Length: 233
Image 1 (cartoon, rainbow, N blue to C red):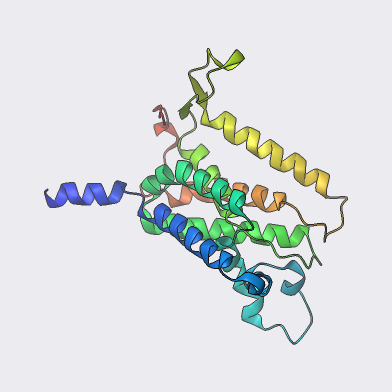
Image 2 (image 1 turned 90 degrees about the horizontal axis):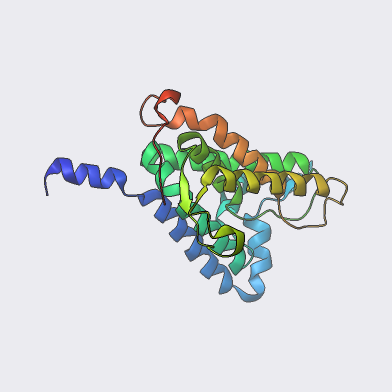
């Protein structure tokens, strides 16, 4: 294998995406081993909006800030983490290749922080910790739809009225997902801030951040006129 071939292989291998997935899984396994200590772990590393703007001197500066990152790697249950790693793998690999490894990692973290901040601002006073990589992954979806607007997936459900649809546009899947998040967020506005549930507004905030940041993180100069290729998965 020549140096050029090796370099091309490494540049197209989604090492950061796989590393993020591995980190999520390892930390979740650690959570499962904590037993009665899990609650304290979540309270420490989950993002609690009430702590961020609290006037209490018992909460230090870093204690208010590091959960913006640490909360991305904590998940509440098996379904939560399984859904996240599937979406991250499907959409993250191509985005990482388009951005480059280092840029993708920075982009992912920035989207996660933006999503967390959006959650805090829409849930001021909540004492329930926010967990999960969903906000950061939402940013990845925003980048994906920016870079690959006409990408299509093979239809896995070839039954009933879906049987004559061989491919499903990725844009349709992402748009449907975004509409569900937005409507769910609207529905949650009149609920108590401590009712818990899914952090829908964090998902919306992460997606918007991804749309905005994506064009600045492409490893080449981003050109909207070069988006005519069709991709299949």
